[in-house]
Amino acid sequence: MSELRLLALYPDNMNIYADRGNILFLRRRCEWRGIGFSYAASGPGERFDPAAHDLIYIGGGQDRDQVLVAADMVETKRDALAAAVEDRAVVLAVCGGYQLLGHGYQLGEERIGGLGLADLETVREPGPRLIGNVTIEVDLGDGPRLVAGFENHGGRTYLGEEAEPLGRVVRGHGNNDGDGYEGVRRLNMLGTYLHGPLLPKNAWLADRLIALALARRTGAEPELAPLDDELEAAAHASARLAAGRG
Image 1 (spheres, rainbow, N blue to C red):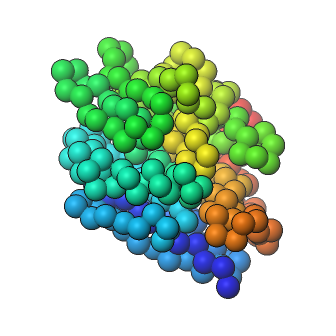
Image 2: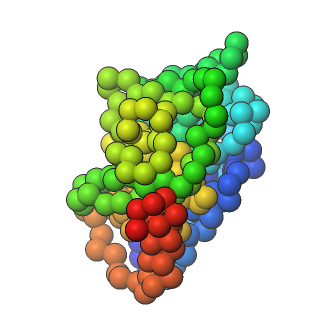
């Protein structure tokens, strides 16, 4: 039987906006299909084997939480995370976790060093926080699809020349409320500001991540059995409507 092996980084430090619900949703989508699911966590000072996990999750945290984990993440997890990305493991990094994928986060006079796994910089600039419901259009290899969620971030993220955005903003602010892009994508590594949590509002995206993660070991994407997604479809429609995109 197939098994999805998930690793959560700093789940006790980087877990706001109910984003732990993403992990629970992935577990349920697997269990309902008879797919095994294993969960592991890696906290401060702990290293991990990049070959032992199919999907790596990094949640969001307040600025103070990012400061606490950033240096440890670079020292104890950066090399393994880079190896996992190159080996096409799925990485989902949300909000603060997304910001840490880049080169750094400038907070006034203080700079938080990032992992450097994506060509992006984040800066806390003057102005209001970027808050609200958001819809973006993405293509993860199965055609254009809409993703709906909620954003709440003070940092503005700017992609470098080597970075590919996760999606195009349809409604909302996105990375910096200026360039029309949201998130970042590199191979199967996805960074995004959308939370609340994200996956229960976008069941198709959860299934896409599961398929990509399982394909890493088997060499071919599995055909996932369909589920009764009446409630999930209603949640997606409600999130899109809240963002002004019915």
